[in-house]
Length: 273
Image (tube, rainbow, N blue to C red; front, side, top):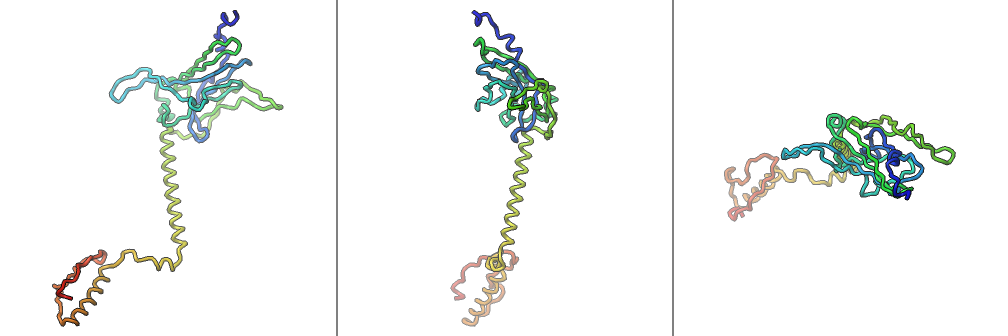
């Protein structure tokens, strides 16, 4: 009889959400974070948290979508959205390329109008009934470059929770650019570092070469026109000595071209053999 007439309405009032969301780096990943806790000693069973972004937008075709709902991933695939609320926990959303906040920086957050809805669901341990608690954050309630102050301390072998610090945040350094822009800058920096390392490796290799190795290398240009002219002139002298025939410059098959080009000569005709 007690289970049938009791309602979890009062139970939802003992679930605490932080007044603001914060955006900061965690494990080299830009994250949106908020904190929630349970004020009662009896724990919720199978607690799950979800988040949705409510925002109006216009499609590429010009269609207006009022109050469009977009899911914010809180770790559904990894199981991070399933909670065991024995202490206050900071819930995070990784702002990656699939996040609706991927292209939003601090200036864009202040200019746009949206609302983030947080829904916490679980089963009341004493009654076995479903309990749901909700809160929301608008664009002015998101702190860029901030973290939550720790509210748990270890004292004499046990943890002590100070709920006076539950809503307290502190500033941390964070670039004033979106996650998309930060990703592009990091990719550009990695490319520059890779090119610098390649140049250093090349310089080290060339400096390590001995003079003997450098002399063994063939000349860069190969055969030039001067080499070919000298070879053809020696062949012509040998032919003149053998036949007694003196060729005029007009009959020469060597063209006067720049010495920077390599000329491929045709084979000698039978008249000069």
